[in-house]
Length: 210
Image 1 (cartoon, helix red, strand yellow):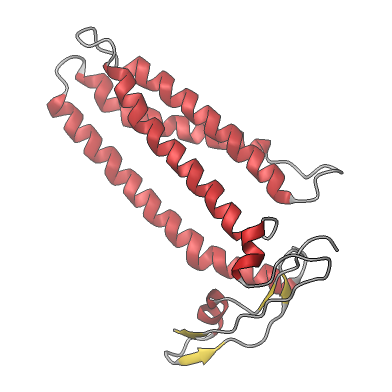
Image 2 (cartoon, rainbow, N blue to C red):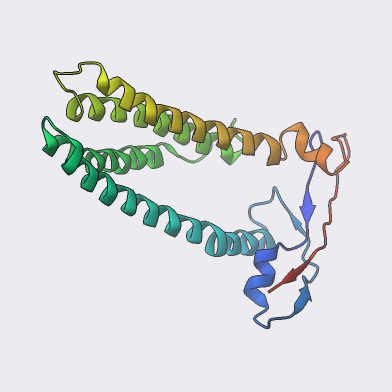
């Protein structure tokens, strides 16, 4: 085998899901091959991560986005001198573009081909397509709604504000993938187990306070 195999004992989410008492507990030994997506232990652990971590984070993101839209509409009505209606509708139009480009990105994620053994390849393709469409849609909506004849180049500044945030988010995602994915060198070096021709087993055991 020409890549490191990472095995792990159940994560903290497993402990939070299967232990309801408020005491210091230790996870039971549940060995799971991390790259085997059909392993029941891997599936149950990923479901726990999805329910506990991802869904909660998405709820906070939705709440922040709603507050952002309301705040932007309130400020635009008071601050905009020329064409305040376009400034009011700008945050709504931007998030409408988000729904459209996200749907397109999801449709671009298809079943891996015969030469694509890693599902992350198709996920990255969908994410990259979504990222490019978001940049284009944000630029069009900024030019369409925030252009002012008094300051013809002002809409570019608004576009660059959003551009910096989107590029930073993309860099964060790629950096996290590089430092946590088993396909890259840092994953093995962090655990003191550099990749070799032999499978590497990592068994971290940590108590969880739930």
